Length: 387
Image (cartoon, rainbow, N blue to C red; front, top):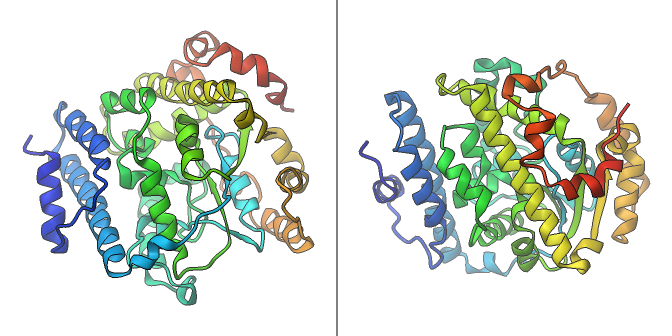
């Protein structure tokens, strides 16, 4: 397969007529591993072209980000201070909690459209009318038309808050790629290694969004933060961390179902059991590495607010209030009212229930014990109970 990182970078340069990649080339680590793993397996011409197009677009965005900061060096002066960051596993209430925290009038969350298309920089005056919103929504509508069952698995919308996963795509250190292509070697790398430089890319994107865009206290979430809590706090020393918890026997199979549904639409050769094993490995590593970081550093451990999924579902206003209280943030009446209105307009299971069977993915209590640290369950099992 005639595909290398150098070829893709050259195509991005040709597409943009830009050639300056900036001083930080740490994104090449993930890019090289991803491309090498992708090319080890025979793919259809359609899948190869999809992969090529996606990576060239991401590389072109990196070139444009460097060009923006060369032309406007003041972008790099934007300070990202004390963000609220959700670090729970997928399917533990991370998305709904991000949505609710982001309803604070003082909060600012990246939006799906600006995370997908960060160049040119976001403008406050066109934040709700930018043509990139329609472009993003069109892409999401195509996805939902092709795979309608994912509508019940996850909220989709161009103006919804974006998880940091979309920002990590631009560093080629993202579990998004395991939901798009069969790349087991790349998954092994993600699960086993710190992703050097990933928060430099992350911070650069927040600066891009906040330079001329709406300002506010950054409110973020992403399970992958668990892989690199030390690097997260190195980038944002005053970050306020929230870890959500739910029984892994519920979250891991649910995540496997979502990833399989997305992946099999592109690669019908993938099996449910393959996905189940990769998801157990990946998210077991999330829990192991985050727990190890908390055990190494009691100060870090003490600054994390732990939240049970059941509490977010039962009494979301109280959970958000507790988080604000823990970090000495004001919780205003307008925020509480926005939460109530949002929940009334977007009730749980609005688009149907996500139905799955753990055994279809080879996931059992016994198999999970091979991946989920026993000491994680011992410490947090009181937060697993649900009705």
